[in-house]
Image (tube, rainbow, N blue to C red; front, side):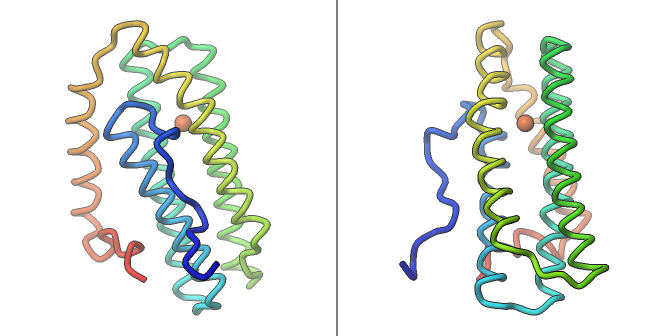
Length: 169
Ligand SMILES: [Fe+2]
């Protein structure tokens, strides 16, 4: 029980686009870090920093994913629905973060579980849907992968202190 990982990545979650998979794995890592902080009753400061990273990284990831879909000419109705899901999730985590920050409310297991299941379902259903559509349309993600790596590297360089720090615990 002690060593059980809260949110375990599985190959079934792969969308077949390396850069996207890597970003999803990072989101899984951050959620595991948040879970660990809550279980260990770590300081408010640490929890806020993790929440901050979660909001920040999620926004960047969603932004890149949406750019990929637009570049690939993804179906506009599907795109709009996908973007709505992204916005709802960002709102949920931003709300949890501000509740913690402003009202001093601790992050509940209920919210962490919600985030875990939301992300899992979103990847398994909504993200896989666009990955399949892109594949069927013959869109090559290779050029985009280079763009996404550069964008993520530039972001990490701009915030060196945070460079994958959440993986350390
Ligand atoms: Fe998505």
